Amino acid sequence: EIVMTQSPATLSVSPGERATLSCRASQSVSTKLAWYQQKPGQPPRLLIYAASTRATGVPARFSGSGSGTEFTLTLSSLQSEDVAVYYCQEYNKWPSITFGQGTRLEIK
Amino acid sequence: QVQLVQSGAEVKKPGASVIVSCTGSGYMFSAYYIHWVRQAPGQGLEWMGLIDPIDGSATYAQNFQGRVSMTTDMSTNTVYMELSSLTFEDTAVFYCARGEGGIYYGRFDRWGPGTLVAVSS
Image: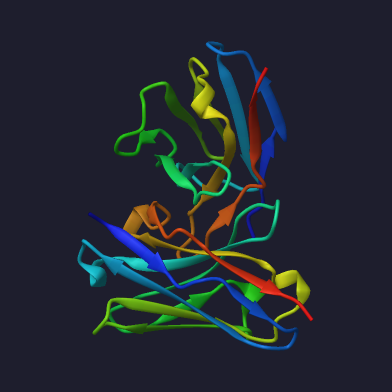
């Protein structure tokens, strides 16, 4: 079973600054990784898939990178509407899916 | 537009079962798998399993094996998830989400709004 570990648990960033969220897999998942954003009371929203491909309608300030076991989600310039919990998700071995525990992103 | 609509909130007693439905519209229902994800209050996302609406074949996560059952009704574009032997720890919001097959099978591009299941004595 693959374990996905996200860090930090909570991240506080000033408006307009860069936010960097990390996700580590316990074994290689190639680039079979997605990122989701979840705001309170809402379902998750797909941001990134295949480690670095933005989903339809996702602003360009969101970018993903990495492969193997180390992945990063970067928000280039934090805006107030970006306050949310962010989850990484691996989908390397059909049909199994594993989510990370989430990173809470706050405005400083 | 693409939508997944879920059934309403439920309150169940310990030991009971619950059935949550998920109805798709605005797309070819048979072309996507439906996944179920559990989220306990204040907690993260936990994948429960998936079903192929075409033939009803389902795969369940190990944590839910023996307690979950997913079925499909193609005449109404609806998938059902039944969870049995409920405990207080099953109090959660249950989401359905659609996913493709193939190399992007984990790309959940549409989610239902969620169904709250509360287990209470």
